[in-house]
Length: 73
Image (cartoon, rainbow, N blue to C red; front, top):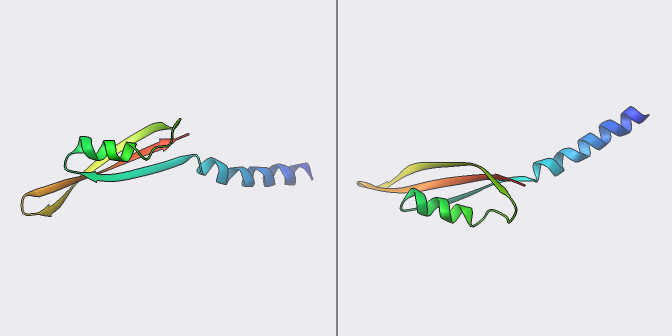
């Protein structure tokens, strides 16, 4: 019976652990601006784990950057 309650408590704890991670995404004319815009959505007290950026073509010889900031609390 104890094993059942232990397994049930682990299953209930998994969604709580998943809620402590997140991603913010933004676009800008350069990587610095897109990253700064994405950082504005990171909650206070969260730690930035990773930052990724990709270049997006929006016209002839015109590019924008899309950056994602991955964070955890």
